[in-house]
Image 1 (tube, helix red, strand yellow):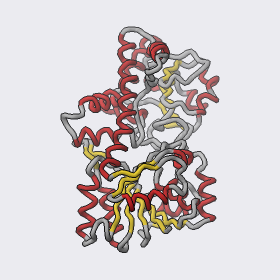
Image 2 (spheres, one colour):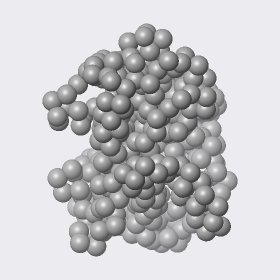
Image 3 (tube, rainbow, N blue to C red):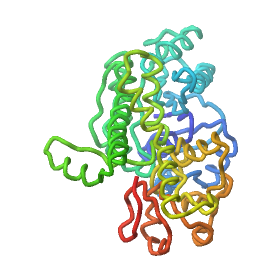
Image 4 (spheres, helix red, strand yellow):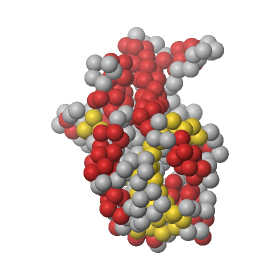
Length: 407
């Protein structure tokens, strides 16, 4: 089947490659001409386990990359869906633009599947009117589907194959048709439901995780205030057969957990008290890290902030994705208080994206006395011995052999 995948970022590119390697005729479209040129020349814009092998397999089949929208039987839209910070509501502008472009070229009978995560009701409010304004009859001329992505950077290829999927459609017949396409590579269960349920389900999944993380982080603050070992408390509490508390951390990043709950807060004000509190708790963690740094510096007699270094810029371990990363949030908090000077290093980022960033680990260590481990990259475990003699704040409880401070 000929499919045009719109948006070749962290979700769209692996999806396009997976579909192509599964025998579909794929056109990958992105407005970023530099990105398209890189893909045409075999250069993948981000690191991901197995993606180079998948790319090699896909180009042996039938896939092209372009900045143009191509007339196809099916369109899969995987563009970003940020939120408006003031209102906490979704910013649908990327989806609106993509759907309008598709409507300019598509034939009757085409399927438009939106994989981008959206707040409940987004498709009814913003997508259906675009299609209808073009004179198309929904369910006859154009078939609309919401198939929210469910993959995690760092393990995308595996999760594309093994995570269950949801297909939201206006009719079971169309849902089954789209399900058959995803079944060409997805080995897990694929559920068919209506579009609004699919929208809500995806947002709820990430909100559930955000709330669980917030509980661990709030527990950390409680234990710190009363000189208790939160990790020991969690370890013992988790021996209960129905308790599974997560480990605390320096904050929540990425484009899913740190963003999607805001969609519910924005759309259901007054009904999302727990969700709102969880968001505030997790967003407060970078500042809590700074408070711990301040305390540790006083205890160690340190006064020079320029001798403090942050290890890790990405939002999670072993990926090069910095979207909404706690480290960047921490540095932004410092700017708000007219403070700066922290040095930064991340083994996954080989280009300079921020002030005082180092690309050589040994040089970075030579310039700092206190290291804040913000991300548990495999690199830090393999190089832990190089931290000898440093004051360490391990926000991830990842180090095994060092004398460290914890959150």
